[in-house]
Length: 140
Image (cartoon, rainbow, N blue to C red; front, side, top):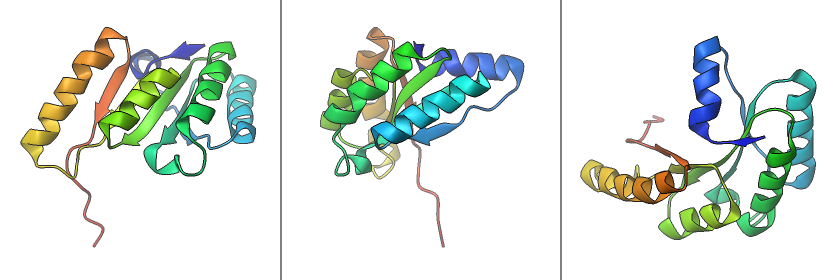
């Protein structure tokens, strides 16, 4: 059952459990992750990141992710992880993703907030949840 992030996280918060978010870069991974979630009767978040697009284009894996999520016996959120370009976000919307992470963290804070707010207006009209990224974690 395809759900957005708001729906899947509301139940997790209410019932105090965690939900895994797993990259599904090919059909085999996708089938295995959904199958395991169904076997365990637990919700799951499947995702595709913009940096993975060179491995498998979102136009190819995205519709498969949505199809498997829609047919699943458990709640499944199809999430775009770390989308950094507006054009890629639009490709994810077109593919049917139910959740988008718009990563503008490389931009100044004010510009980050402005761009994410702009995109939220589009996404929320489509009942798609949006996550933003603030700042960068120092790895030194």
